Image (tube, rainbow, N blue to C red; front, side, top):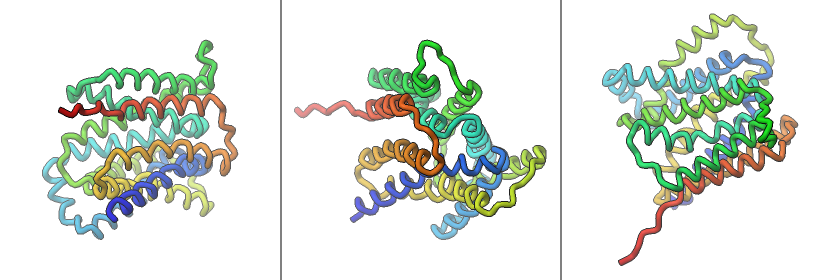
Length: 295
């Protein structure tokens, strides 16, 4: 029963994450990246606050923050502030069908950052995963014109790849974090929100009035930053087969491309499919474990 429950939570998380690239593009039609970050972060703070209350974790918030305030401030400045601001700007400059697969290479980036900062060993299959993954990145970024290395938006490609460094760095820092993960994310978003508001006031951009755009940005706050994270954590805690649950995430980018084509009408270039298959292939190889020998 627990395995069915875990699979259900994981599948719900993957399906919700598959929709956010579409929601990003719909939201960016009306909001600037800074406005989008601010509103989505505020919605996420509210959602995570409610979840902490339902789970009986509100009493942990202040003691957790007091134990290491600068650490949680740093986490908040990286995620959501830096990471999502850069990611939203990448989506603003690129078609979502390019930005989303490029961002998906963060797991490969994490392997090499873990080797650099945590001293973890890089295996032969990690090098192969890197070769496949970043070959896929080049195929997507150049739309298959590898020799010309001609990028539609070098800045957009650069920001999408920079977001992978920030996201991997965030998880590297979290290896030192012993606090409850939901409380940690709630603290990070809460501490980052005043900085996001200050950036919005400095930008002084026009705010949209259309309710459907506000609904879209609220959707991003709920299902990219807030509730979905808790669903995924719950799935991992409920299962005895983590790899089976984790492998579901490989379905997400392909569903995302389908939704982008159907809802927004983005043309999915064949090179995007090829590049994404290379990235996912690299991630699958990276997860392979050496078979244990029986005596």
